[in-house]
Amino acid sequence: MRAALATGAGAPLSLVEREIPEPGPGEVLIRVTACGLCFTDLNLLRRHYPFARFPVVPGHEITGTVAALGSGVTGLSVGDAVGAQFLYDSCGHCDYCVSGDQILCPAKRITGITNDGGYAEYGLFKSGYVTPLPAGLDPVAAAPLMCAGLTAFNGLRRAGATANSRVAVIGAGGIGALAVRYAVAMGARVAVIGRSAEGEAAAKELGAETYVASRDTDPAAALKAWGGGADVILNAAPSNEAASAVLTGLAPDGTLVLCGYDNTPLTLSAQPMVLNRLHVMASPSGSPHDLRDTLAFSARHGILPAVTPIGLDGAPEALDAMGSGSGGGRRVITFA
Image (tube, rainbow, N blue to C red; front, side, top):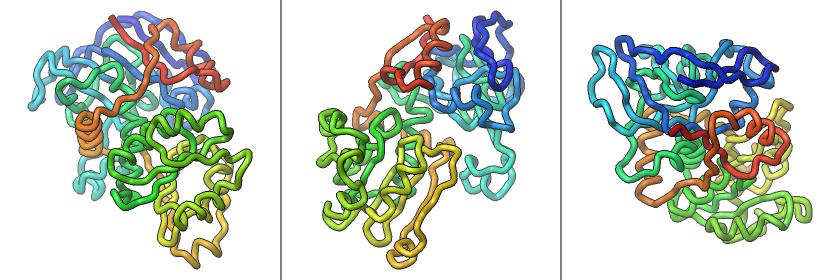
């Protein structure tokens, strides 16, 4: 099989030929249909993850079909359409695992960072972390739901977004665009904060009722003028500064959710937080049951991202373009 291999932090991807692996006990061999390119893949190559294992096949937004099953695997059959996610596996016996919060397990392993992922024609995955795709869900367009969709959907619902909420989303790119559509489908009123007025038409097309260009307007003040502030602000931009700038745009008891971030310190003013009982949380992808809920909600409401299919050979160039900000939309590696 063909695969793209990250050989070390700072090294470019290498395209290689490998033997197709065989599943062991509890493992599922997936013939990969598609794998989305995520900013996490780029950060892997940029040395952001000291726990990464090299060499490793990147990619954690994976859809495909079951090619073979290891011993002891139940609930799946050869030919099933499935997805694999950011969470590769967890210990299975800590308090977080037994309560269904495997994503918080201290011993969790990460697909495409500590274990081989989806930049390959085939991949081995743990059966409890392989999720059936709802019938009729396009596997190519659905690939980014395994991370971007899961992160956005889970962030919104854990922050308490409801049909009565005012939800603001910073950045309407990959995660942000899905967050807007999920919030609208939940019945919430939605605002989008972008850098320039050029993003307004696209935000309104996604369903946002209002748009704030942060280069021209104080985003926190604009949110306060929007009915008294946002109940939930989801930061989908890779910028801690953007998140800090909107803190006072929260309504009392509101929540700032970090889905996007960078490596700089997050600076927040304590006084408005204390006086208004504000909350700050992060959304680290999700557990297997969270992905099932994300996919079911996406299928029910017809929420799929716009994607650009590329071949495996185009992955290195696509990651470079993503790093320079000229990615041109959500890229998804597809395999014939």
